[in-house]
Image (tube, rainbow, N blue to C red):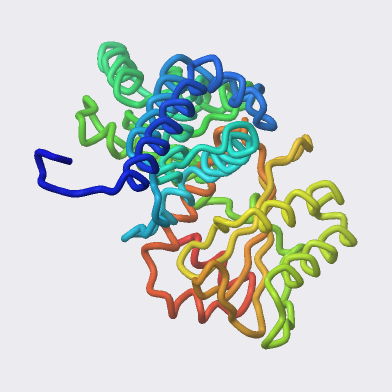
Length: 364
């Protein structure tokens, strides 16, 4: 202060010293062991098996940096993280629980608390151990071998099985459900086969990029009805002044009565919406929960009579979703939704009048 030629009264100096001392005391409460304990307290995280050294170090470092640069004024983020939340909703929901536990136990100031969600997203990506089956139809042995190695090297989490004839493809498909069939031959494949990509000769980096893009979208684009039920989709005639809590409660109650979701799932959805940081993708609200039911992803499209504001964002329609956070393909549904919805002008979302309109949009 003397070097800067700034005068502080004794009272102000004592206040500053007290703040710095409090920071030091708070920093002493943060350690890797503390973070591990907090991580293990997050519901459902154990089954995901994502608590590794890198996640612990990332979160611990973030907390210590927050203490060294405390936020004494409210955050004012310049941009939205909705696109990231839509791609990794499980990660950001886990971060909400982590931050709630952190505030209960330690109550330390945080800068950019949403960044915790990115650390969880990275951990989920690191631990995608499920290897998806790909059938490579090739009648030339040398080319088949080099293409198999190229695909497995460049496309993560896949297992390539070589078939010599279309009959072998059919036989393999009965044993395993391939996520993709790559036709690398002169044969024609039966039109009944789903998810077929034709790439001739030796597969280049452009070819493996085709495969990556195809895998990202094919499993939902070609069968969106598998994930989004016509029976559970309907029009909800909300009043112009009805609250978001009331709307979600009424929609969930109707889905429970129709046996599309359980009472437990409905409660999880309502609780998730009450936590804030609601998932809204281009004016489509996506109330969701992580289900323990032995059922695949379930989505229900609901049109609203009147738009409303949720988290200071306009909401035109609702998509209720129940998914299993430990089923990697189910998380990809959210990513696909985000990529499709963010690529459309808002008036297209506003103009969706029915379930059929929504399905047609996903098949574009």
